[in-house]
Length: 165
Image 1 (cartoon, rainbow, N blue to C red):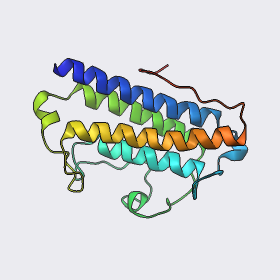
Image 2 (image 1 turned 180 degrees about the vertical axis):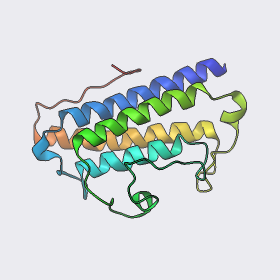
Image 3 (image 1 turned 60 degrees about the vertical axis):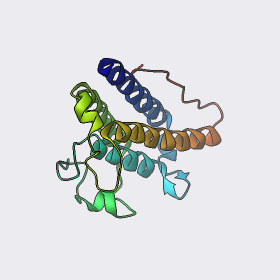
């Protein structure tokens, strides 16, 4: 059963990140700052990936900052990031998160998935944390997709069932 769970989680992480990738790829450069609710398109993408990266880590204390987190925890805690990130940087971060998701899910066991999330504010299992993380990606991907369709009805980020396509 554990292999089925890992295959399912891995496939859905891949699919959600692939759909986000399509949004990033299809966003015209002149709309990189388009509003998604009250935040720029790029900031919603950055926020989403910061939390994908964080929640793929075993625990809050175990998280390692990247060059994409120039202000450390302020990148997560403050409403606004320390600086603007360009499309290339966000696409690179998405690739990093995709690789981290594949590696993390592959290493899970029945015991690790049944254990605590590793984050005080997420009072559920590690398995549920992964589902929560995927839902977060899909929430913001849906927002970005809607903005792209509003900008140009011809922009149609596609649905992905499973896997990186």
